[in-house]
Every structure is written in C-alpha cells, then in structure tokens.
Length: 166
Image (cartoon, rainbow, N blue to C red; front, top):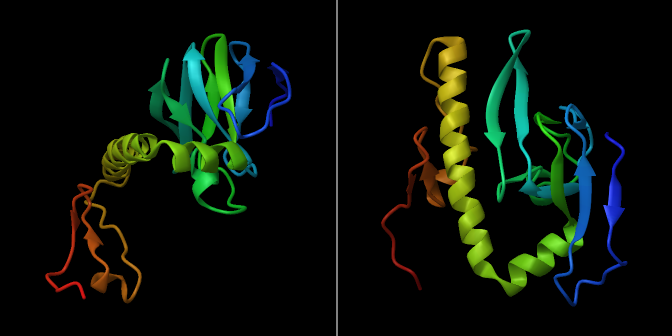
C-alpha cells in the first residue's frame, strides 16, 4: 500500500470535513490483493485502474476529477482489492473510511444512487473487457435462490419477478 500524507484536522463524522491525501505521479495507490480499508474521490489528477487477466495487465478505467475508486472495500468486509490503482499524474484525493462512508450514505441517499449508476457502467465495461479477453460471452452467475429476489443480466439490467407485496 502506498504511503500518503493526510492534511486537515482530525475529524468526527458529525460533519463532512474530509481527510485529504496526495499521490505523486507513478505512485501505486493500492495493488490487486491488498486489504482495502478506504476509498478515494479524486479532486485533481488521474488514476489508472487495472487488473491482471491471462498474465496480461488490462486497463479497466482511467479516472479523473470527481471519480471515486476503491469503493468495493466499503461494500464487502475484509475482501482483498480486485484491481490495482496507479496515479498517472499527481493526484489530490479525499479519503473515505467505512465510518465516513456510512455517514455520507445515511445523510445523502442521492450519493448512493449516483454510486450505483457508476457501478453499473463499470460492470458493463468490465464484462466487455472479459468478453474481449476470453473471446466469448460472459454470463454472470446468480446464486441459488436469488431468482426470487430478482436477476441481473450481463448488460446490467435488473429484473424482478411479478409478485404481490403484502
């Protein structure tokens, strides 16, 4: 994990005063397989997100001002990072830990909706890259019993069974 400098006073989550960090160009912010404890929102600069597929590094996205990354660790407990993030220019970013993430979502549900929309776009792009890499259509696996809750197709469309709510 990259060493970083934080600025600003210690914070509590009764306010939205963010902690900030800087990553010089070329810094590996985190690597695939690292344990993730924070996510980031880019204020300035660019970050490349990549993943190793078939012994080759594939660029999944190049993110810029206003984009977020590292969010998967906020949604899953103690799961390793699924990709590598590298600063392709000097980067200024806001650090968001689990406590701040929960506070933000509880107090501004619109952020959750925006994140879901962005995640759907990323899922589509990742599925497309996998299909290009493996030369075939990729079907998303649905856990047993999940059909009763709804399904997600490979183009990220969500459908729900017709049933009455009681």
